[in-house]
Amino acid sequence: MAFLEVKNITKHFGGLVAVDNVSVDVKKGEIVSIIGPNGAGKTTLFNMLTGVYTLTEGEILFEGKPIHNLTPQEIVKAGLARTFQNIRLFGDMRVIENVLVGMHINTNYRFFDLIFRTKKFREEEISKHEKAIEILDSIGLKEKMHNYAVNLPYGDQRRLEIARAISTNAKILLLDEPAAGMNAKESDKLLNFIKELRDIGYTIILIEHDMSVVMNISDRIYVLDHGKKIAEGLPLEIANNERVIEAYLGKGVTNNA
Ligand SMILES: Nc1ncnc2c1ncn2[C@@H]1O[C@H](COP(=O)(O)OP(=O)(O)OP(=O)(O)O)[C@@H](O)[C@H]1O
Image 1: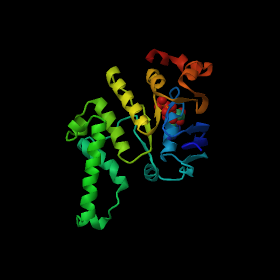
Image 2: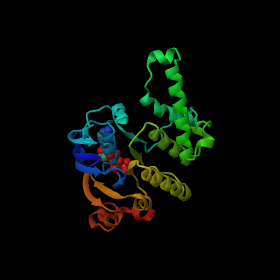
Image 3: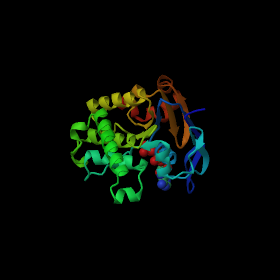
Image 4: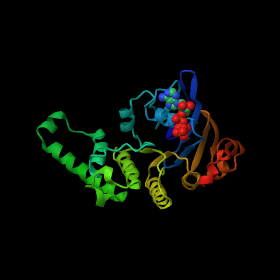
């Protein structure tokens, strides 16, 4: 049984078929990339995985259980958390507060505990605070935990988004173009960090346009074009796949490599 099984999913927007009968299997501890030209259906696929869009057809199983009828919040609780193509941090909140927000999805205390600041509430808040610092330390943002998110350099904001996804207790991280807008040094650092996450047990699914990133980091790659899956395989197989070269690499993306 795959960790995450995406079975023949389809998404229609009126007459447009944005994702057409696509299946994807992800094993625990893999880095899987979803690539394809603009409009291929990558973001729509992510939106279906995270409950933002309902499926027109098909099913999604996580650890053997269907998740395609859950709300986005329930899906985060089940263990899938994402980052966005356009960074969506709380800019006017501090770095650590952004991480704490992610953690509150798994709060165990009740409204009563919150109102009366009970022992249970205080203990849980302290342990969350400690865990948030630990996460920030692992991602290299501990020194900046009291800075406002909006003041962080771009690369740090992207890493903070990942920290917030981790803080939800996610098992699978869905990263939408994590290296977008980064310079080569920042992007290298991020790649190493994502590999470290894989090595400590996270499963990662990413959408990425930069082929040098994709080829360097992925255990396996799925390629979409016009909503259809046109290839899947190891990075080297994908790099040499004629259909992929024609659909995707032929359109100038090789310039990024
Ligand atoms: N909410 C929506 N309503 C109508 N059409 C949509 C919607 N979301 C996406 N589409 C269409 O579905 C198709 C797939 O779009 P999608 O954004 O998933 O592609 P993508 O591979 O992520 O592209 P990009 O690399 O440019 O982000 C496109 O034709 C797009 O215009």
